[in-house]
Length: 173
Image 1: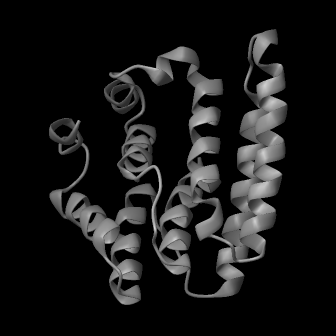
Image 2: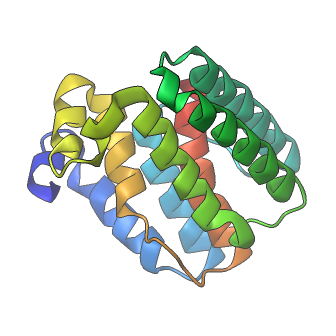
């Protein structure tokens, strides 16, 4: 996947993601998160509480709409409802600045939403390549999500920055 991703994004962005994931210094985290987020358009701003709140509101609204509007088999209707409940709980936790506590929930929600959209295809080994080829912007987003660790012991601020990048994409998707 890393070889293919270089056909779609600059090596500097890949390096910034690697630096972001390894960084502990807040200035490095912010600098590199902005570079990675630039792949999803301009306007990524987490410098004020107001801009973060607007991003969270847009993310929640857009992801809720995406979940609600995704057509699924009757067997997956309850999954849609479960994801919406998880999204509410997740957003309530981040409103309380509990970013580190909900990292695993966030990645689980993303996996489940992508499953709703693409079905079992999303669980195959070649899904990342498929996503890049059908929609490069979405493929870059999925590469980003799958680059994140399953769990971490990062600071609250680093978890916040990392999740806000994904939220930025989804708020504008």
